[in-house]
Image (cartoon, helix red, strand yellow):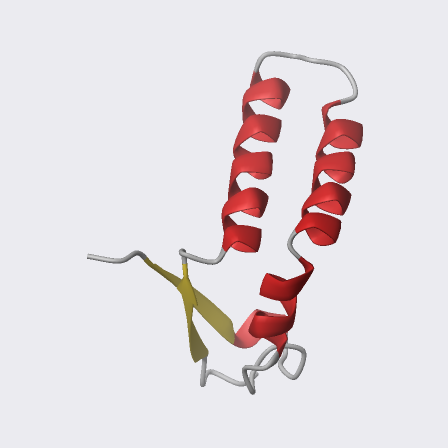
Length: 82
C-alpha cells in the first residue's frame, strides 16, 4: 500500500467546482428529507454543470495531476480566497 498521499489544492473560485458542490449539497438535503429520485436530479445537475462550465473544466485539466493519479492516494484541500 502506498502511503505517500498527493495533496491537491482546489481553488473554490472555479465556477464548475462551485456548481458541483451546490448540486451535491442539494442532493444531500433531498436524500435526508426522503425525496424520491434525488439521485436522478443530481445526475442531471452534474450534466448541466459540465456543459455550462466547459472552460473551467479545461482549466482544471491543465494541471499536471488531474487524470493521472490513484484516487485513493489523494487528499483534496479546498482553498477559498481570503
